[in-house]
Length: 231
Image 1 (cartoon, rainbow, N blue to C red):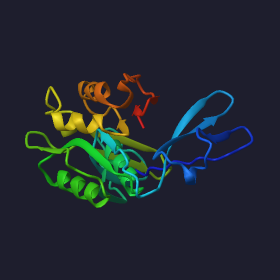
Image 2 (cartoon, rainbow, N blue to C red):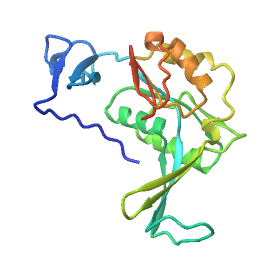
Image 3 (cartoon, helix red, strand yellow):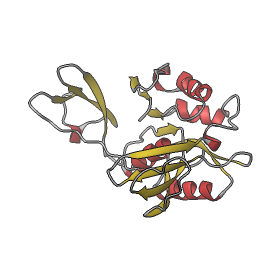
């Protein structure tokens, strides 16, 4: 799955910095832009690119999946077998995608999550590491498979997805290890997707930036610098 963020200005939208300096000359490593239209007032995170600054890391706590893509003309009917036009297996999952995008912007990024001790787990670990994500807090569990998804992409552009939670949803400790909680507490930004047990998300929210409780079903909430929701 591809990830992209597009910000466009129109007569009905405006952007402005929360400082008096330009974005290229900001002193703080993390700034906000305000985005307004007739009905919403949102805040968008921006980063300074000064390499001499000690930046608090982005910490992504969440899901990693092996995505099995198949291209088909249409969905099979009940009891029917169809041949796919093509297929491939790629590293994905909302949490892993977020972490990789952040790291590719040359921002220090850690991923806290779980994969199984299997080929899919190796695929994900290699992809995250290759993208520059720091994997000190990635746990390999032997008693659950790596999370994976079957993505059926039809020729008309519609897709259907089946997710197997695997290690994303199983075998988490009842209390997160102290080193994971310390990492979250020191983060500048924490990202959650709610594709892991809510008990884990709650622990992260209680120690993360802003000490927020931003759990709203199928929503994106910004509390301090803790971002949570389905992305």
